[in-house]
Length: 313
Image (cartoon, rainbow, N blue to C red):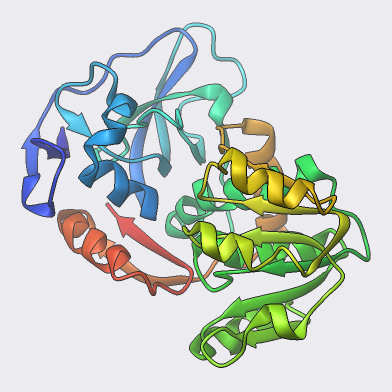
């Protein structure tokens, strides 16, 4: 089968197309013929950063990717909830590698849900890692109707899902992003919009119950210190918060929460139900062909992607 392999961690020049064996199945896995995948900022970090080489385990060759949508072509002996011919999507094996940059992928059946028939494989593929990264911490901190929620980096992949999940929960949502993303975020349900290039959010909002921070910077996290009410929560999507930073928030009675997203078929089914009922609207800014995965990495590393990028097979 064709796969986009990585000769070594580093730049995109280490990518190449290659023929590698179709993966064999464990008893609890299914074999998926890939129709679409998605590229995340985390993909580019794992590609380029030797400090996270542990995610590959003993893999050889190195094949990146976590997000997938496709068709089941074979099933393991103990799989009962799916059959050959089912179209499925999911987040695979995170934080270890899911090896989705390939024509065929072995996936744990527990990580998958049926793809709604009404949506494309590209739409399904982008509604996996980014969607669960937004959904899981909101569920864990107990978001409730009437909560005032600030979403930073709201126009990105995780952020635009966080806006929608918070609205589904009945929250009042304030979206922080650049002006070019204002119309999209208001269409997705944001109640207020703040242009971070023109205004300092900490000077104009207060009494926030939950901040969902998608900016990879401790100083940015600190800017939320004086806007969250006592008993409120800061969710950091990127930074595994240092003890010193955590203490600053705790002194003000603010909970601080870092979430490692995990594959979960039940969560994927929730996402599938929202998609099937037009209650979740993923935004895809560009679709790349499989051979152009390196170009998709370049696009992600520019840091200004609106919504998500998809790759079509």
